[in-house]
Length: 133
Image (cartoon, rainbow, N blue to C red; front, side, top):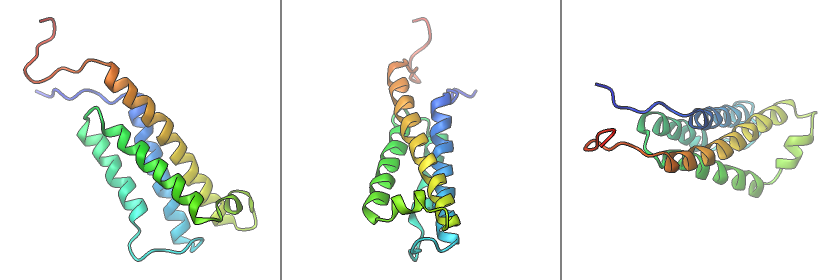
């Protein structure tokens, strides 16, 4: 018997946002628009966190997506060149990859916050509890 609760729309949007952000960062790496680290931790972590949220289905998992999104946004701002990548159309791949990444980051941030609030406001059944008792 499968007792797993279905994913909310906000949780699904969080997962999609994280995967879109991973695609944006991968675009930047594959087109050499930014310096590529020896191991591309960003996209790898985003995919792993998406899997955690999808397969884990604990109340707190969407907040991990929010924290990762905030971390990426702060990192992009601190790295410099974010505004140039977002506005300079002559650097086509940097422009496209950065917009894709930011779209995913903001989607995951907002949807993850909404999903976390919903998860903690909705009563969850434990394995020992029965509905109606």
